Length: 358
Image (cartoon, rainbow, N blue to C red; front, side, top):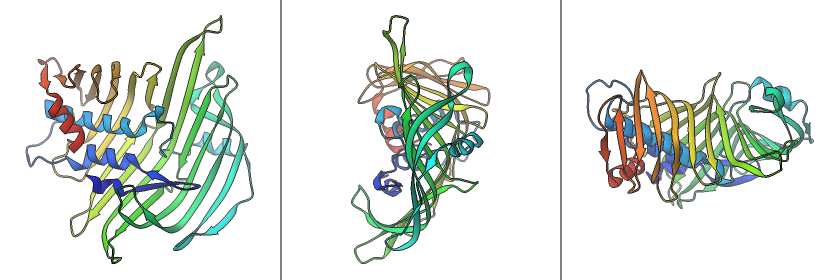
């Protein structure tokens, strides 16, 4: 599964890190979507094993989108409100430069007020955030790239990428990422080369959508902090990943967080408890993978640093619900509908997360 980690993301200032979403989501969705069972599937949570595979998707996404990481992962969609807000932000003169191997990039800084739409301000209005950021428009921009797994090759980026951060009038900190513009997604392609320069693999990642992130404190009338949390919200965030190794067939996956009308959210409180809420859709070309639409609900916050040792989530799809209750020993009890709880050991659950199940 290390092969899948070769998809990369560059922020507007240059290479910053590998795209962990491609790694974890691909592990969760593409890698283990096998099984060789030709029987028709009834849905992503119809059985114990289906529910375990779907959970690996949800938790894999959380692992890479964790709002407490301090480093927003680029996922999102420039909605109408984002475009109208952009007009209120001052932009520096664009700086056009040639990319190392091919293509061009246009960079410029932004400052001013951006209205957040997934977080709300007074009386439910859009939340104004005074911030600064950077925009980059890539045009077939190709550069040499060394990945974190010691592979190397050429990285080609195309499309629009924006990042920024700032404060609201309560001094809470917010950040945003915009990927893609005007129905054109942001894309990254990594062509891995061996020592002789021969192509040995290709990974491609595309995304369109918007992430809004808030680091928020809530106070009582005496000024004491009563709640502190970090939360990321996504609406209709579209992700696609494809990988080919050697002569093998290309494996692809797609995921969508939220819908045009509803957001998907990840929230971590000051005690480290995690809540995952909202609609999620995923598909994969790997035979045997049961994709589909999920509704995620957290009944009690997920707890644990090295692994989940407490908490409960419910995954619902096609009028079937799977309840997953995490145990202190690292295992999980899964209950499908009104059926009896079925036990999954810590080893089996860890294997599902590491190798994927869907």
